[in-house]
Length: 278
Image (tube, rainbow, N blue to C red; front, side, top):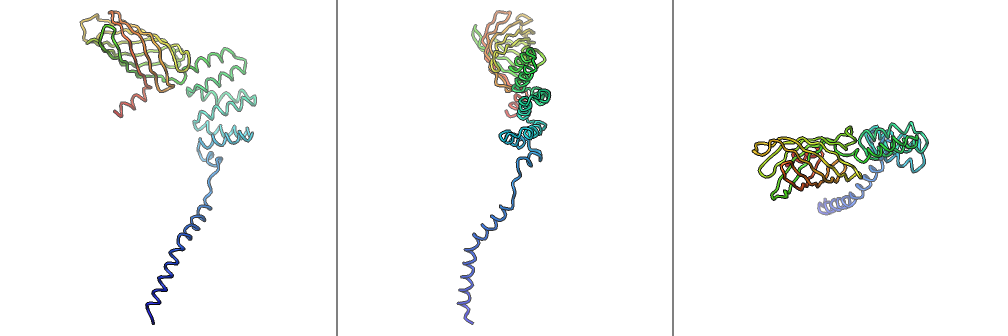
């Protein structure tokens, strides 16, 4: 038997099969892909995906299938998607179901969502409660702001020199819808330090700007100056929703010092995160 021709034939066959492998793999992949079915938005929603419920609800709304959209938004709302609570409430208001619209809108409001407060105000207005609607719009200006802020301030003393201040401000909705503030302040200036309690008022002109004033009272720490510090500040804060604020103010103390303060405040949780990564 002639071995050489047989080997040449074998190698030629192997080369032909090697050329066919990409084609065979492509067919196999195509066959596998065609057998994989992507779940529908409804299936993903019923499987626990709030974003899929919301997308499904939007799709149903476009198709004018409002009752099914109501159900989809309701599922997303129950999973904590406040935007879906708003959509469900608005759909029900459009259908004239004011009582049915209140629970999802109330949930968005209770979660400190500005749009939730405004939508609930529209509901109260539709019921003829102008006073309730007005109060909700007043609350909406401040509802999404942080309840507890940590603020760091830099003081420019008019008599020369620099100082600093560290504040913890508490401004819950229960205190005049975050208009009244209580806090503690630690100030350093001119080789003296004071630990103060603070009481203030901030007037929300818009949802991002609030002129404010506060008084500070507390003892000087380790100083031969007056044993008690009494001061006041007046300025304006610029808010970034629940994140925090930037502020600038003029301040003065009973001992005659006057200063300009520039401060940055952060929600206390964000402040802890920043400190943890320093």
